[in-house]
Length: 364
Image (cartoon, rainbow, N blue to C red; front, top):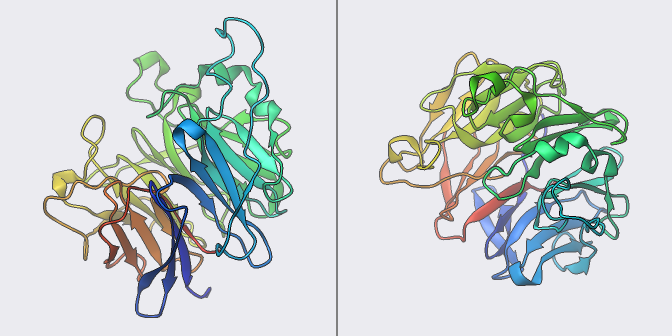
């Protein structure tokens, strides 16, 4: 069994916090980029480069790299869109300008992938020193049908490289469904069959292009299995996204976050909430739902989590599980951070006064 992670990173509106596990629990060990919004962090194995994406508002998006495990940082290149063609823009989608880096992942070949708002996919083969827009995705005619889901422009929030096929990856777009490439990004096919957009007119509810996928997670040990938290519920695929089956969880199937067990294809965790204009835990009582049988049933895990007057929302990247499948971290928009060392059976508060939490990542 893989040893539990002893390091983790918390990207927040006011900086990047490093966590260390001392055997008794998690402690905050370091803070980088104090008072600056960090939208995503990509930890790295020893000898490789960490990356952190910042959104500095008026000063734009920035990318920083660390070659010493987060002790020091250097600004590097940021994904940049090419000049937008002249015209009225009616057939070009949202403005070709980076709003923020929303996701980052590293594939088995060491290539770093970044998903952005608007819905661009970039790759870097040199640790972030330079970035290349994946034109094949950006130039898809179907991209013109993508819509903003929570933001004015659509964005790529989930990048799921296949662990044993370096040429293959699957993306989640809000709002634009799921897309897969098997040739290193040269071509793309939509993979949202079986999803249902209840908010659309009946004749378009099963249209794959209008699916508001909130987050997709892959089981690394059984990569054909994928889980998605969708605006309209929870879905699971056992055939690498070729088809999706809808699941039902109590107290709610709505939410933003999902974490897939790294080896067990039947186990995943979700952070349920009340949907649409409310966006808060059901009955103002926080829980995590877990399935261990492929979604046939769900447990509501509440031990150690607030059960009264709780209004925390968990963002798309606010729930993560480590490589052991035993340690989890969950952080909220209210700046509360909880940890579990027993696969979610019980939770302990790590910090209750952090800035709003955008993303959590365990050390690689």
